[in-house]
Amino acid sequence: MAVEYRWSGWIGICDEHRIVRSMPRRGGTPDNSRAEGFFGRLKVEFFYGRGWNDASMGEFIEMLDAYLVWYRDGRRKSDLGYKSPMQYRRNLGFVA
Image 1 (cartoon, helix red, strand yellow):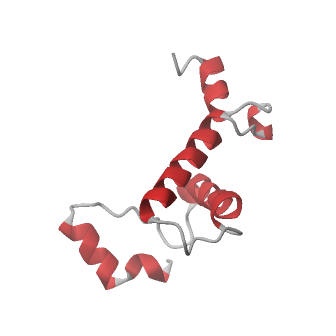
Image 2 (spheres, rainbow, N blue to C red):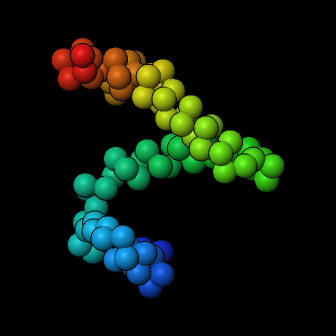
């Protein structure tokens, strides 16, 4: 288990806001691999290499929102047949 998820402050915040923490059994994280992959990609494509010292929280949120819209609607993925996630879902009939 990752130490940051067991930090007592984090556990207290989750408990206070009635957030259920999802943690796999030791050594078993297949349900988490896609999320880990996404957050790794987010850090590489969005976060690293930028100077964030002068960005306000509002600016950061706007930039993150724009990145997420691009990731969903514009970013082509080879494992989706070089379609964006939204195009892929539309082709499957999951999106109107």
